[in-house]
Amino acid sequence: MSPEVIALLVLGAVFLVATVRPVNMGALALVATFIVGTFVYGMSDKEILAGFPGSMFVILVGVTYLFALAMRNGTVDWLVHAATRAVGGRIVLMPFVMFLIPAAITAIGAAAPAACAITIPLALRFARRYEINPLLMSLMVIQGTTAGGFSPIGIYGVIVNGVTDGAGLATNPPLLFAGTFAASSVLGAAAFLLLGGRKLIGRRHESPAKPQAETVGAAVAGGTPAPHHPGTAAATTTTQDADQWAEERPTLDVQRVATLVGLVALIVATLALDLHVGFVALTIGVLLTVAFPATAKAVVDKVAWSTVLLIGGIMTYVAMLEEQGTITWLGRGIVSIGTPLIAALVLLLIGAVVSAFASTTALLGAVIPLATPLLLAGDLNVTAVVVALCVCSSVVDCSPLSTMGALAVANSAEEDRERMFRGLMAWGMSLVLIAPAVLWTSLILPTAS
Image 1: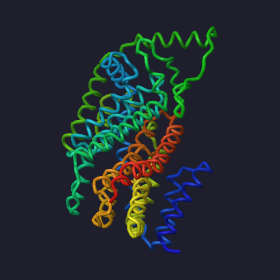
Image 2: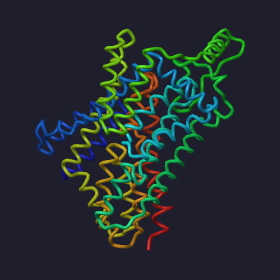
Image 3: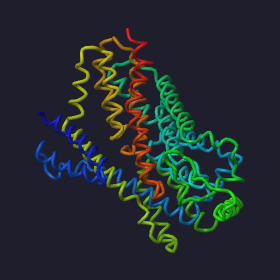
């Protein structure tokens, strides 16, 4: 059995064991990386650890640390109220606002993780306050982030257009942007319809759902609050609490103003100056801690350490596969398939599967060159295949093992993280199968010569 096959089988075993046993998948993946790297690939410890995603570690720690501070000092509550007032109190509009904000940010050239990291903590706080399904809000942010990324000046768009131009493939950048934006919009609409969005129609912030954040805020999978029976003391109490909260208008104090300045600095530094979002967030968080130590107690405990371990372990294993050429080996095997249409379908599947566990940015730079020999043969429409590859490689970013999905899990309330992880995993893995089939049928098959 070849090393490539062994490594892929071990990866499947990691997912299986972590599913049936209560063990952190990241810890299991790190053990698998050590065993496979040492005894199958003959790698040294230094070579194995070189694949650990230090950048992702800093992003997750920095962002969750900063927004934990912002939640403790009331800044996030103030922002939630401000966002509510901006849409006239129409709760139903907020999921779409959380779709459009990151779409605009990535469309002008921001990195997708930065746009997601800035937006998703606010989206989840809003969901928690108004008992909106947090899975819905997370998916709207993630799909919005993807929707803007393929603009001609977006990072994804620049990568894809540069790679195709270098390979001598004639593509249509505006059509690539339109196609990927449309696909992300359809998925956002599907999430809205399937995950409780219709229940928001007609709701306004003057009469929010009962804010039982610790018990009801819950239903990540279904978005349905726990039932309450009229006439009971509990129902009366929670109604009074809801009315009281509805009348709250958080005000700005020195600490909240300082936090808002820090958040603006985060946006400017990451989007305009292209600085690392994790380092910037951590720097701002530390400065706020030094300035206002009273509200910073136990904030480090709010960092999503289990998520950090999970993502770090899986990404280290995938990095090992990439370093040892296993991913390339898999791609070459696909392109060697005799029938172009079948090869294209398999390539879409590989793009979706790999992107669900690895960097979309890195994958886009690799998967299109793998498809180049297939596209140069002239049997398939180049633009259709490129659009399909880009959509399949990006819509699965909601996987909790991908950067943006990991941010959603990390910024969820502690009691919601397991449900969020499972919800994103189910949604993302469904798209791994559905997206290639739909795009192959609707784009590639009709345009093939």
